[in-house]
Length: 441
Image 1 (spheres, one colour):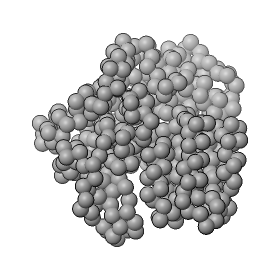
Image 2 (cartoon, rainbow, N blue to C red; image 1 turned 30 degrees about the horizontal axis):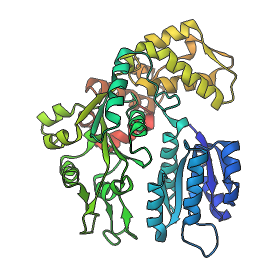
Image 3 (cartoon, rainbow, N blue to C red; image 1 turned 90 degrees about the vertical axis):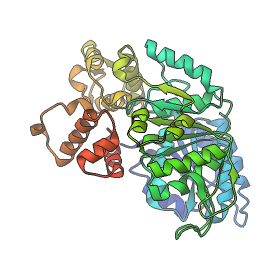
Image 4 (tube, rainbow, N blue to C red; image 1 turned 45 degrees about the horizontal axis):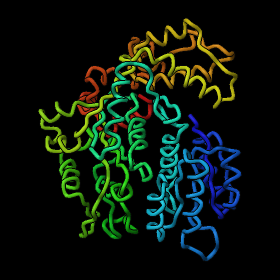
């Protein structure tokens, strides 16, 4: 599925053409401009979700001040837009300054195509329009369910502190959206919120991603690179799927947290860190401690405050409002007329199990909007991906569908324990995680 709108700003027209072609299958609307003075007009007219911004525009001037200036202007005019900086190897330290000034990430030239696409997709998913957990003005839809109101009260109390937080909940309940809300309410909101998906980072790249590296530390280390700890300085560091971190790497993370400093890979100089740590998982870390799969001392360190996000099945009174929120969003996105749910469709939505939680509901509504020819979404237009797994395997049409159902079924049988799921299916955790992402489980 194509995502929102991206504005590309670079004075090199060859780069504009190349990047635009690369992103044709990723973004719904792509705007490419060579003159940064046109940025304000496009922010007003096109309302981009993401801006890919070059750091230097005038020939022979490589200070990066232009990029930092326009970064500031974008954050003032359209604060919900995520800015990804475009920079050369020699300007990486400038990019780090940009991150501290509010940019979401940076891409180094010459760029890797897959890395470019992945970085921009991630940035779009973090924008106000790309949230997948139901959002209002603040980015978080709290609803009226008592369990959510209790959680909201707790978040209000702890957000203003620097206490480390562990967020638990099933897949699709909105753990990253809750993290964004906590950061927004904290005194660190003016600084960066950096995210690392522990399930998507290989063990070999973990230290470089988290702690950074110095030039020559390994074969592809062509320049010094700051890690996410440094980029989050003064702000918040979000470690998603912390339960997927191997036991050996847990020790390295614990050491950094205890010493409040990190050392870049290949380096020797300790670098002090000041971050607020938020971790998330869909697994039972206490059970993992008992089984020797997770360090007890690390659990104590990251679990000063524990917040649990209830499943959609535990807050059924919020389902119709969430569905209407997504209905309005996708009707606008796909240029459809105003739509509404029939009473039968609303009742079906309330009764469905929604094992994939808010993310599954969102996808179901989006699909219904795309396929609808009228203004009403009927009972027959609503289907859920996770509940499909209950159907007999004989009904599958493709190998991919069979694989998707098998993974869903095994996840439920293992109560979301992905290590156990991977073991039962005979694949690595990384392979399993990639397939979960592929099928949107």
